[in-house]
Image (cartoon, rainbow, N blue to C red):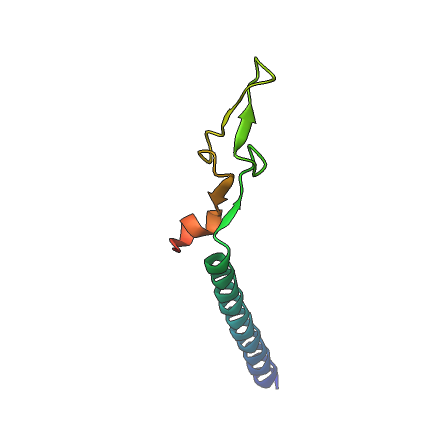
Amino acid sequence: MTGVSVLSTLATIAVCVTLLALLMVFLLAAYRFNLKRHPYTDCRRCKGTGARRSRLFAHSFGYCPDCNGRGLKLRAGVRLLNIR
């Protein structure tokens, strides 16, 4: 009697693990597709403008050193998964 309940419990666990693995594969594929379509994000340092104000002289501007004046940076997932 206990053997049947153990087998049914193991079968339930196997089904849950399989569904979880399929869900993870689907989510990873969707994230990779999203990274392929939108590889860039706004630069956090200049807020996407590409310009930075001088700390000493408030009227002077310069290029943002993080994004080289573009205002965009690669997303972390693009660098991690090497997507181009």
